[in-house]
Length: 382
Figure 1: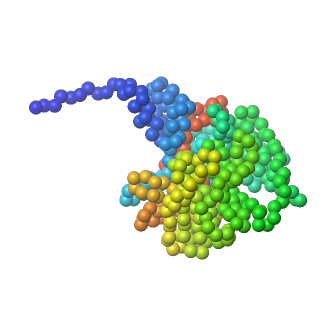
Figure 2: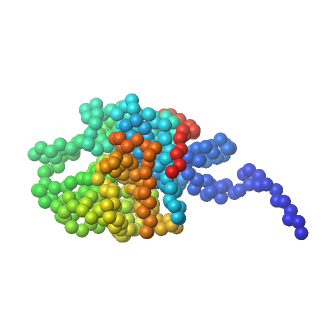
Figure 3: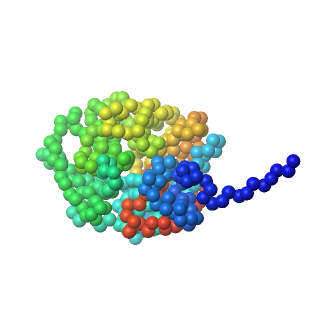
């Protein structure tokens, strides 16, 4: 019997719901290139609900900043031989001072910039303090519409502790400055903020902190413009100087935290058992322990960043860091008995900074971000 040839499926024959379920899992970079396929797809890729769903399905990448260029590293966590792909984002930083801080919803730094698009809007500086100790981006998570804001803080300690919050609101294109005054605490009650691993989740900012007795997470709530304690951390002991700590997003809606022993280099990682809420019912689960001699210090400087994943291949830890002797950027991928080290020869190592972000199609301003612009990436395979 000769099998009859089936006719080719006409465009649009798939049910729209099934078509959307397929496209929502496609990486944003590919979706940008598919805009021109048909008007229906272009309309779908501009739909806020689709964009948010696509962002929730996104996988973390690592941004690398040198003194003059910006790169993105995507990681393929395949079964036997994980690999990375380095993309030159073609963003020239040599003409302006720029810090890689404040990653939120695929945007980063003191600019309105998404790496998938080819236009940049620089935020007018805060005239009183053009540079500050901490700067991050978020939004009011209690509102149905995301109103993005960029925050800079500066703390001064006198008889009282005075913290200056300068918030740039994209909706009004203006800075709003407020001050918070708190009494000085006794030494055993003094809160030490560790802002080297600040992350943005649901619009709020989170970072680790400690007193002489406990470790915990602090949060900046953009809806209330206040700093508050979010939850306790699972760490034991009170000797903060013997360990380093880091914070990252896990599965898009949870938190992961690590603690690394400075002496033995052992890394312990925990994750929250469910998506982040108000902090009252946070339960930490031991995710994995890495006991590898001379393992790099994961969170000891601004050149380091990390994320964890749990897929069909198992629990995986990925870190990017700068080795000092000799100076060289590396990516480590650890899963079970596997520990793969990948040297990044293509990226200049001087003044290296890194952070984790998730690429997205989210736009903050349709007027300034050139919606639909084809991204420019020079890709290097490793």
